[in-house]
Amino acid sequence: MSTPSGVIDRFVQYYVALDNQPVSTVRTLYHPAARLVDPFGEHQGSEAIARYFEHLLANVRQCRFDIDKILQQGNDFSVSWIMRWAHPRIKGGEILSLPGCSMVTSQGETVIYQRDYYDAGEMLYEHLPILGWAVRGVKRRVRV
Image (cartoon, rainbow, N blue to C red; front, side, top):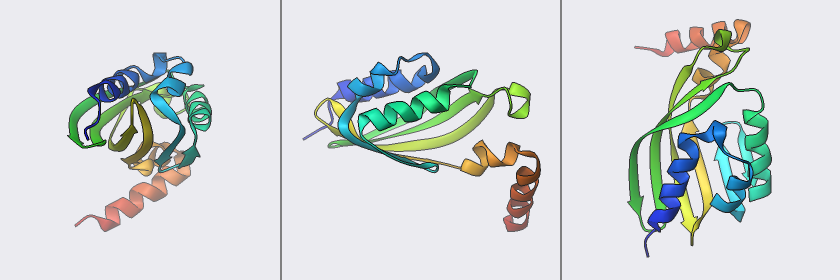
């Protein structure tokens, strides 16, 4: 059994222009019982995922993904990406880049499971005044 290319195409189209997508798109892309896990938490069900995206995108100026590579096997596919995002209160609103990947399982024409992997410190914590100093310091000490 293989993942329908329609699910992959819709997934990619959704994330390429994430900040311009209506919330209703989440409800058609994700299965009602879908689960999304990322470094900030876990969200169960398409309604919870829709609320999560609505909250995340409420104050960003931009949030789009450049898709690097898609790998597929059966009902599973992975997508490596670079997120380009800007928030008015982080780094003066400049556009920031964050590499990551998503491991996805489809069920029929919808996404039933998604696990996103990225460095939450690089995304957010390093850009906060005191916490950023501490995170950057730890990273410097760990480097060889």
